[in-house]
Length: 411
Image 1: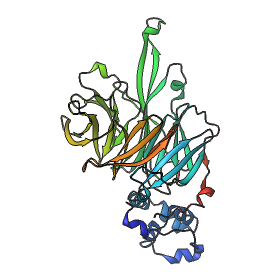
Image 2 (image 1 turned 60 degrees about the vertical axis):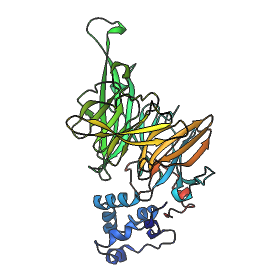
Image 3 (image 1 turned 90 degrees about the vertical axis):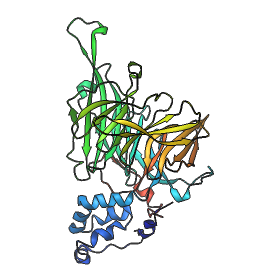
Image 4 (image 1 turned 120 degrees about the vertical axis):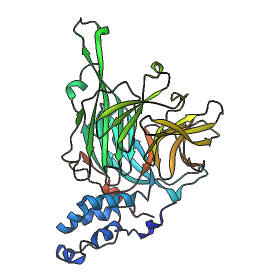
């Protein structure tokens, strides 16, 4: 259900903006932010050009954070699709969800051009509230704001490594560090170096290095990639999650350990650590690392009770340990996505050429069918909310004219 605060937000479709001189005197600095918070995203963007005081008020980090917090209470589901030329974003509002699985109306949000980008596949979608991170071939990260139709390419650092034969990006993560109010992109790459013995391929040594890109609303133009000096302790599965100030991946070398480990990276101290997963956890069957309420959870199948999902929570202490926090009965085999919200966890069921998405509420055990699509190629579903986050010097900005025909008002 949509938040009751949705009704308070005013649409700017017929709003007449004041002249710069009138705008300067119209609101004092204490009242202006509260008024701007009630406007839709499109109108907030327009208000930045009214006068300097309004532009400064909107650019103020405290206003940006307030806007993000307020917007987060009005979540939608965002469908990301890729064709030959565009990323297309469409949203599904919660109050319009048909819980019986019937067709829902997709509202077009924007389309972002991918012209000039070599895309053979879209390897990664990650959602961090108001921004989406996409990865194309070769490994180029694209930060996108679906609401404004802007994107910004973050080309990988240390290209001398990446373009050498055999080098490979093996781990990605994009998320929001809420304790620091920062977004972060992390990549873990493997590169090969020759030993001093001979030129035999068996003597080539694999190293795993990581780099991160941290940014905020006011630092994105000056932010840059930073290499993490400490090497990653082992290979990881491709997609991770950000929880608090840390990122997590499932270790890829599962057979080496008696209990499947999880690789964690402290994004403040830039330190790696291996922690053991829950006893008996088999991520081959159900890979599922998620973050809920600033806590890491692992979703697992109950080996002794078919159809039951066990959700383990990580308690951090001097010796991290796992607690079985939730058990949920499912009537179908499902995979989990590392996408969560205040509504719950997104899980997916794939039957032949139909993909069904459900929202699982661990606390109540309820499982609601929220969306399904046929022939789900090059598409992804996640949670998002609408914001005016500017991406600075962008690589593309299209689709805004198309939005004019679709009200940006929160229902």
